[in-house]
Length: 404
Image 1 (cartoon, helix red, strand yellow):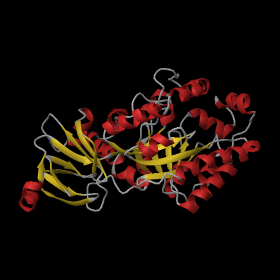
Image 2: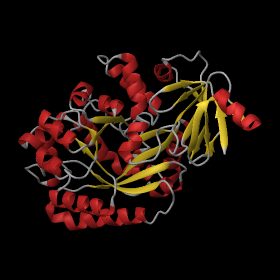
Image 3: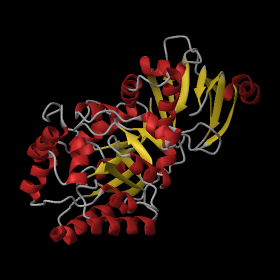
Image 4: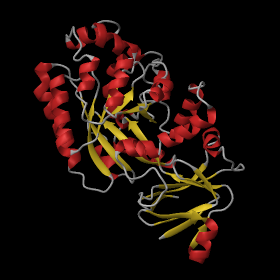
């Protein structure tokens, strides 16, 4: 059992001054420091002035297999980026082995990320994800819109999914990703979601990331048409947006991006109790615009923040991602948005991924970050942590120190 007494404690939803925690594998108690000193005496560890305890951060959406990218891919527009991915895919994949992926996982840990959702296209990140200290929701991705190839594509997906299901360690959760409405045939989607329901697997998907996707799904035209005609000999979209969302009606899902969703589609997302993953840096680099948070709030749709992968980002640091979001959404009230951003990478992300963490309250897993700031702590700490990221001194997962 450990008793830590910090200067400030972020529970996940509120800030407490001069409160400490008692934990082993889970949080046992949160109480004022003076109460814990009186009860436990010399067993208490005093963390000192400027010390902050917060829940471990959760990155719900990352593509680790493209972690070799630095300046290979083309930014500024979705189609130029996609074409560059296709042209450089083999090169980037071959350049990122287990060591490369492990390095980025360790980098996330150094930024206080104690859990992440890995969207795996090929299964090349499985070994590193299985061996890392963090909790991992391992989303095996299903892709393929050609009905003639459906059986082969599903067999490949199954092989990767079954391989992830052989991993038996606490905190590792084999799961399913449906790539997008334009890239997966309805038969494959329905088959995979049926399996997910039967085995209670978590599900994620990309949806309405770009205007190119919007035009292709609505009109079978736009910038995507040459891509599908030339590469796949397809002249019509694999799904309509409404059809695609209808398949997830009884499967609460994390939908990534959702920048160009219609009002009717937002209603479907709300009715399905789905969650939206917001990746502001990726959205900016690919020229896709900004997620309209006001529309999500008006429709009472939960949103969380993720980094996406290094194919469309320069970092897997959620502090940086939150800071960019803070300035991107300039119409939102500053302090309220800072607090919501913190909730989006802790309590809300944990709930969306069905993880027992993200809050420092009794009975939750002791996934904890201990940090130090070099400025006076005030009620605006959630804002200042984004403006001046703290020094992360140690990280605990399931109550065991994994860093520091």
